Length: 622
Image (cartoon, rainbow, N blue to C red; front, side, top):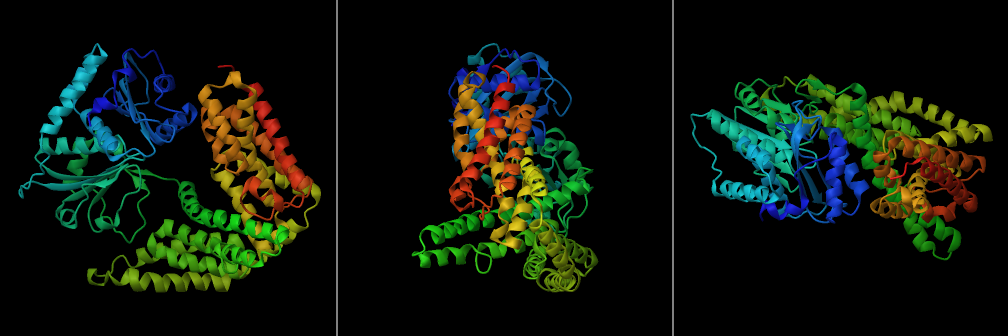
């Protein structure tokens, strides 16, 4: 497939009018929308901006490659745009960007399209070709340049030298979306290695998976390993090698420096028994960020158990309430979802196990899960489970450091004997003898206090929980509120479904408010935004707060402020009216379980109307 099949004359802008980064992005997105290449402008832009937040796609040398892979794209397409004057794009080299390639890839982009996008990225590594593009005067000239360059590139055979005299290094390149930077870094490293007389093998971890996978023999033979990646790659295979971990952008901009460091072995020796480094090229992640990452790893693995078990549990309640004759089905649903034999039994062990695994890799999983199970069965609850996860992770991490000097011949004992036995003994012993009794008492005290809350205090707590659900719509505040409600729900049983009512109402308001605003204030929204607004009716009713994220990303002050206010009011109202929803998920589909179903719907409606009208009146005309 030719590059010009996805980069056509219709999607070129030879005289970009924009003078700022966001304006340039908007102008290129408008071109995609005009040509019918995307179906949701808001969603596509939010994905583009999300990628920019991870690291600027202004790769330097006057080139920017904003890109996204999303369901908002109808057909894989590239917009080529050129700015004669150049503009500040927050490029990695601090220089103005003149050439822009906005890559729009479909969620299900096929192999041919992905390979074509990779070929496009590789061509932009060549300075002579880039200079020709900058001098091109017509869209036809641009098409001809790409056809000629792609033909020449395909005619060259990519042969890895087998000169045993030459230094040999291996590398892995990867970026979050795996479309552009992955392949540009690959070509930059290959081209520079060829100039330097160095043999190199580069594995790419792109959208279509790992390609040119490194063999064990190649890794063993290499002087050093370069991992130019902005996402997690398989690291255990590099055990005992000098591994240079760096952002993928350095693979593009600093290939010679990286290759020299790999040859000189100027990188620490990687040990797969140690926690993956949180340092990248000297830049360390804060303690708070590491704790949050570990916590989110536990929560993200726990959520499928919450959703699957919660919805089936809700169905079992509905059947029991309205169809008591279907006892066999009710018992089955209760058994596979409930807390004694089903999905809910795993909530705390899964949370603890995957927190520990995030900290200490696989050796942390088993002691973390057992520690979580001990917490669950001793009434230490979610608080005990959180502690068990972090305790197990750092216990195993300490064991790895303690036994790091063992003779190589005994290395095999670590994962199969030392870490499992000592990790379980220390974690389980500390939980059983010390922390479970402490947290059981704390948990009992908190539960007693929650159950004895007066109406005024309950309303305040419900207001806070509801508002938190809308602050970041799926982020840490949202997850903290939801996890708190889940903790109370699973610890005290259905009688305390009150806080589930608060978080569910608070989480349903933002997408419903967006949908309402786009329906009432139509002139203030583009056709694509109105279309996206319609989908938010379904998402909101299903308790999927994330439906409002594209609108929040495009207009954070108005959207978030409006939604937090409505969500907080809805959450507070559920407590004022003493509403219980004994199901941890389901939205409108479990409203029949609420003790005051009409009032629950009214709380959501009031919050939605307040948020929707505030956002609609506040939003500027387009």
